Length: 319
Length: 223
Image 1 (cartoon, each protein chain N blue to C red):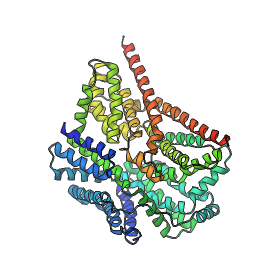
Image 2 (image 1 turned 90 degrees about the vertical axis):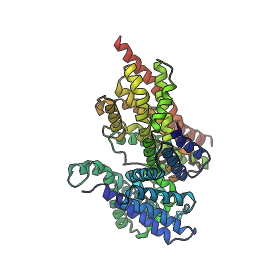
Image 3 (image 1 turned 180 degrees about the vertical axis):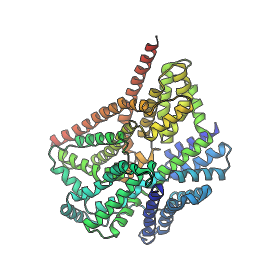
Image 4 (image 1 turned 30 degrees about the vertical axis):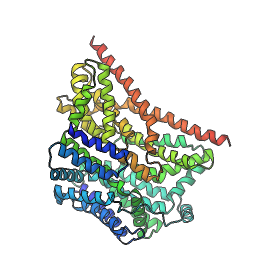
C-alpha cells in the first residue's frame, strides 16, 4: 500500500542528495557538518522506524549538536545570474507557472481520486502522497520541457535548504517537545494556575481566562493543539459548561480559534512564523509575526464580544 | 510546579537568542527530570515523538523543483505577468490569495498551497511587482513589509479556513477531548461555529490589506 512509507522514502532521497552534495562542496570548510546533519535526517526518514526510541533520541542529539555548535554551512548565492534567469523567463513564459501548478493540481486531484482506491493508497495519507507525486511529476515535466540538466534541481534545491538550515527541523523538534511536556504533566499545572486566576463565580472572568489562556499557552507551546486539552479540562468544562451551561460546541470551537490567534503571534510556531521568514530571506526574523499581530489582536477582541453575545443569548433562553 | 521550569527555559532561551534546537532539547530534559523521569527515558520519549512527527519535515521535498523553476526564471516571470496585468495592486492580489487560501483550506486542501510551494516562488514576487507598479522603486523596508504580509496572508487564510473542514486535525482533536469529558458533538456543529470567525478574519485582514494598498498607492501619487 502506498502511504507514508513512500513519502518518507522520497524525503530520505532528497535529504541524502543534500548530504552528498554537501560532502563534495567545501567552499565553507563545513562539509562534514553538512554531510552528517542532512545524512542523519535522511537516515531518520529511511529507517526511523527500525532505530528504536532511544536510537531516534540519539539521532536527535546528533542533529542538535551539529546545528548548535555552528557546524552547518550558511546560505549561498545562486550560481545562476539574474540576466540568465530573465532570458529563460522570457523564453519559457507561462509554462514555468504551469509546471509550478502541477504540484497543487496533483495534490488536489490525488486527494479526491486516491480515496477511491483504498487498497492501493492509505486513505489517511492521501494528501501527503499526492503532494509527493505532484513533486515527482513536476520534476519529470521540468526535465522534459525545460531540458534542465539533472544537477540543476539538486543544486538549487540544496541551495534553498541550506538557506533554511537547522530551522528545517525546528517544527518537528517543537512537536516532540510538546510530547515530552504532555508526558511530564505540564498542562495540568498550567491549567491549575489559570483556574486560580478566575474570581469566584464570574462568567466574564472565566471567559477571559479561557480565551486569553488559550492564546498565551499556545504562544508558549507554539501550537494550539497542545493548549486546547489543558484549557478545556481546567476551565471550559468545569466552569463554562458545567456551571454556566454554555454550549460545548461553541466553547470548543471558539477556544481553539483563540489559540490560533496565539499561533499568529508566537515565535515558537516555527513552521508558520520563523521558517517563512527564512524562506523569504527576511532580514527581520520576526517580520511575519509583526505583519500578523494587528490582525490577531482585533480578531481576538471580536471573538470575545461574539462569545459574550452567545453566552448571554444562552442564559436568556434559559429564563 | 518544577515541571514549569521547561517553559521558563524556552522563554529565557528565546530572549537570549540561544540556538533554539539546543533550548528545546534542554527544556525537554529539564522538564522530564523535574517530573521524575530518567534522562534516558526522556531521550527515548523525545526520539519516539520525533520519529512520529517526521511528516512535519516532508514539506522540504518541494525545494528541488521550486529551485529548478526559480533557476529558469519563475520569479522573474511572475513579476512580468503582474506588471503587464492591468488593475493588479498589492492589496487586491493578497486579498485574492487570502480568499483562495481560506476556501481551499475550508475544503480540507491545506497542503495545496504553502510558504515553500506558493508564497516564495509566486505570491511574494507577484506582490512586489504589484507594489512596484503602484509606487515605483521599492525600498528595502517596503520589500520586507510585502514579503512578511505575503507569508501572513498564507497563515491567516490557512488557520481561519481549515477549521471549517470537518475532518481536519483541530476538529477531530476537539471532538476527542469533548468525548473524553463525556460530551458527544457532531464535527459539523464544531465547524459551523468556525464560519462566523472565518468571515471576521477575512474582513479584518482584508481591511488591513486595503490599508496596505492605500499606503503604496499614496506614496506612488506623491511622486
